[in-house]
Image 1 (cartoon, rainbow over the protein chains, first blue to last red):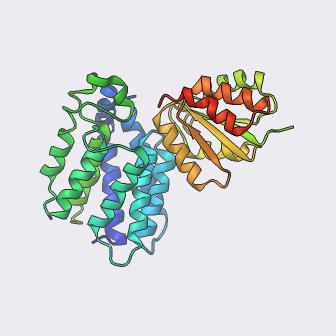
Image 2: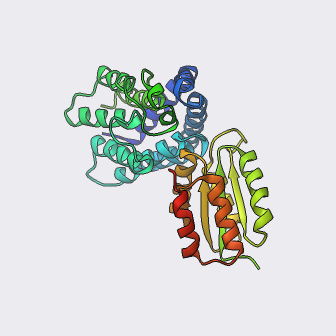
Image 3: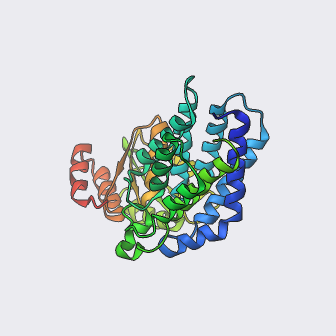
Length: 194
Length: 124
């Protein structure tokens, strides 16, 4: 169950993790993209953390909405609209009275797919979001499940995003967006929110 | 007289849209052409805020939008969803289609005809 406190904790942990792995994320992106995923994500999540620390929030929806706007306007790459759409979808779902974490994550995945039009197997963050969603539904989300979902993007050929221009050359590399999404869900576990 | 339809150019690089608008202004002096290039700090990328500002700055009532790569389109779509001005996004060859649209709008060609002529330039 998400609360104002644990949602902020979750997103703060995510910002810290992204900051710590900034160079690694960019390294992954250098292989098959434009090499800025680490810089973009750390700029966006740092702005998000700052925005979340600045005010008192009454609802989970407000927390997620504020986070969404920071990510949307500060990331500056494809991940801005993607994470922004995910969190806008999650914020909307969090406004429903009888919602739970699984439906909120579902709304986030729907937001990403609506924006980026990626399907499972396209070697994008969608692969991680949908695997996590499936595991959440079964009550079996663990770090290992997340790691496996991220690693599973490596053998795929990219069909969406900057990596898709590389065609077969994209095979053999982990998708950077899948990796950063993996961090997001690992922070859910690390924050004790599950 | 400013045309009813304006042109919006969105690119990852500000110099790309600056250069492209030079090219278009030469043939479309009465078409309002506004641009959003790069990130807020003028890095390479796309910016929701810059796109929104370029939509607001455009003098036309309706906007035909052209973009270079995927994240420009995603940011454009998000701006479109919150914009009061109608925006049509074209998945067409960036330079050729922006040029075609601008030249045709300047010539006073109907919007349906402009869209028809852009159709074969669809590449994404």
